[in-house]
Every structure is written in C-alpha cells, then in structure tokens.
Amino acid sequence: MTYTAWILLTASLVGLSCGLIGVFLILRKMAMMSDAISHTVLLGIVIAFLITRELQGPHMLIGAILAGLLTAFLVQWLHSLDIELHASMGIVFTTLFSIGVILIATSAGNAHLDVKHALMGEITFVPFNMMELPIIGEIPRTTAMLALVFLIVLFFVIVLYKEWKITSFDPALAASLGIPVLLMHYLFMSLVSITTVASFDAVGAIMVVAMLITPAASAYLWTDKLLTMLVLSSSFGVISAVVGYYLAAWIDTSISGSMAFATGLVFLISFIFSPKHGLVSKRLHAVKS
Image (spheres, rainbow, N blue to C red):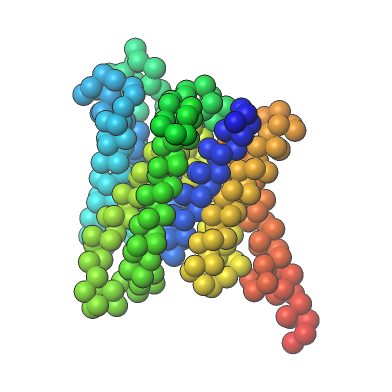
C-alpha cells in the first residue's frame, strides 16, 4: 500500500471506532467524557513510563485504560454526591490531567514524553513504524492496533447490542430486567478508554474528541433508529477522515486538524439539510403549516 493509503486507512479506523462509541456517549449524555478521558489517560501513560522506563509496550495501554477507568469511577462517585455530572467531569479531568503534566515536568523531563507528543499526535508518521504480521505482511504498528480496537468495539456492540440499547435509553428499566447497569457502564468506559488511547497517539486528542462526538451528533440529526445511527456515525467518521486528508493536502496544513474540521463540516450539512431536524426541513414545514 502507498503512504497515502496507510494514512487514510488509519484515520478511517479511528472514524469507525469513534463513530460507534460516540453514539452511546451522545445517548447517555456523556459527550464530554471523551474530552476528559482523552486528557486524563496522560496520567496513566506517565505512571506506566515511570514504573517501566519504557515508552513502547502493552504497559502504556494498560496504564492509560486504568486511568480512564479511574476517571469514570471518580466522575460517577462525585455525581453520586449530588454534584452535577458535567461539574464532576470538569473536576476530575482538570485534577488528573494536572497531575500528569506535573509528573512529566518533574520526573520524565529527560524522556521523549511531553504533553504535545501525548495529546497532539501526528498521523503522517504512522507509515514509518512498521511491523510484520503473518499472512498480511508489513503493516504500520498503529494501524494494526486500531484495527484490533475496531474489532473489539464492533464485537461488544454486536454481542451486547440489546443491553447497550436499554441501558442507554432507560437504566432503571435495565436494572429491573436484571441487566448489570454498573458493570455495563464500566465496560463501556473501558471501550472509550481503549479507543481513545489507541487513537490519540496517531491523530491527537483534538481529533479523537471530534471523531467521538461530532459524527454521532450528526447521525442523531438524521435518524431516531439506533442501528441506523451507528451506521451513519461510523460512515461520517470515515468521510471526515478522507475529506480532511485531501483538504489538508490541498491547503498544506495539519492533517489531523483538517480531519477534525471536516467533522464540523459534516455536522453543518446535517444541521441544515437533515430531513427531520434540519433547518431547511423545519422552514418548509413552517411554511406548509
């Protein structure tokens, strides 16, 4: 595959995984949890580095996932103390992220580990870090990890589709039916953490947040059916990745930034032209009535 093809495939995998996860974040009214986790995982990465003194390996992913779960637990705990959910996210997000930044400044200064590297990413470097896989051959390490994450996310969405649907729309009903709502919540937060960590090293936290929220919000404007919303959200993620890449190539700017911008364009088009909630359809309905 060519250099461009690897970048497009990598970004598309981010769009697919984030598109699926983002739908449930929107339905659960936890959209900004993606922003919180995309920053607080920095703490897990730094602690994993301080323990092992290695910048590569599964321990970095494990540390980041544990930090994501800690974020979810603390947010849920503060919310149970009658603190507003968004306020809880803000408190936990700023506190854990600040600890991560302080640890980098005081304990990891001599390593190639900094806030910009951990949060911004650079997708243009993806094709330069290759690995050999049986049958498939050479493939970028990040692309392989994102493909694995997408398969994991897709597996859990399909296998637990009914449970995700009920717990997202009516947690009380789910609990009455014997569905372990709290376990489902932390499983979902684990999927958010895995997706976020696997994605932001390549494309940056800003694009991860954009991919998790905006395609799902766009899909929400087009349909009220969950299955259709999942398909549309993932499709919008891939479209944003492709459009963003060629926009960046055209005006010679940041690829990840352009992809994030493209998600905004998709939302704008949806906001104007979607058949039920779009501005055009609302105007036409008002004129007819």
